[in-house]
Structures are given as C-alpha cells and as structure tokens.
Length: 257
View (cartoon, rainbow, N blue to C red):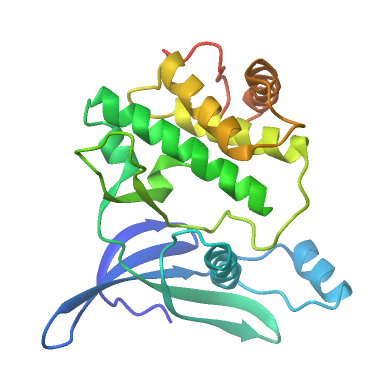
C-alpha cells in the first residue's frame, strides 16, 4: 500500500499525498492519492468496539464526510476509490483516491492583492459556512481547503464557484443545530483566517460575518455584535492553549502570527 506511485505532493508523519496521471488515450486524468498509516489511539479503538462499531482509518471517515456533503448539495472533491488494511481487526493503513479539482486555491487568490476579490471570497465563504451549519454539518472553513473553479468577471455580485477539498477534519454525520456549535466553528475559522498572509482587514472579517448571518436565517443567532463577541471570546480561549491559534486575537486583524 506504500509503493512510490506517482509524484509526491506532501508528506508528514503518518500520511502523504501523491499525484497520479492516467493517460486514457484521449485525455490525461489527474488523480490524488491520499494515504495514511498513523497509529490509532487504543482508547479510541476500544470505545468503538464497546459501542458495537468497527474502527476505521482516516480515509474511511473522510470518505463519509465527502458523501455527507454530496448528499446535502455541496460541491466537494470526487472520490474514485478507497481501501484500508487491518491487522487482527485493527486498522493500520488506508487510502483515498480522488479526482483533481481543476482550479486554484482560494488562499492563492487571496494573496493576489485584488481587494475586491478578497471581499468576494470572504462573502461567499461566510455564506458557505452558514449553509453547512443550516444543514447540520458543523465544520470550520479554511481557504486552503477551498478551490475556486470559476470567477465571474462581468458581474462581481455573482457567487464564486467554491469546491471543498481535504475533508479529513470535517464531520461525517449530521448534528442538531446549536448556537454553541456555530460559535465554536466560527472561532476556528477566524483563527485560520488570521493566519493568512496578508491578514484580513476588519472590513473583510465583518463581510464574512454579515454573509454568514444573512444566509443562516436563524432567530437564535442574528446579531452581528453578539456573533463577534461570542466568536472572539472562544478564539481568545483557544489562543491561551498550545496549538495553531496560540496568541491570536480577533480584535486586532492587522497582525500576522
């Protein structure tokens, strides 16, 4: 399962991504092979067995998250195949093969310096996140996990075509709506936004929040001031802990951590 097929795109302990080109005679298809062989925590595996569930690798749960998004009409990368290897019933290796999404990362467009496009990205990303939460999928959004496949130039009010990729950390099941879940996801998303270079301005963050509220359409969460306060409070708690958001604050959007 770990043969050096295709071209290595990224590698970190326990996982890697490879790009594979397949010549069908008429066209060349580009696929991405995501492989993982990280060691699963024993307590996590034991809980699965106690609940009568079979533990799986990351590849399986990412596939479930993709199917959940597809079933709820979100644009997401297309899986081609998946598999996993077990030893004595315990998952040890897995893979997920997906089609290439033709386009450019939203994070790359963000760095282009086009201020109008940045506003559009914030607006449409906020809208997407609200749609996720309305559907019962409580996941945060990172620009490096979004590919823009089309940018309407004539009408700047037209929505961008956003496709989600890399769903390893996404939820694989629907959950009931709660404001706490919304605020927690927003705090994570803001944390990742503040890690962008250049960092978003206050105006861009407000555009994200306003678009989120417009699309959410829920009476329990309709105040921009309350949303900013609650989100900032949760991000502040995250900033006090070791991790990707350590030291960050939503109140100052001009500093890059």
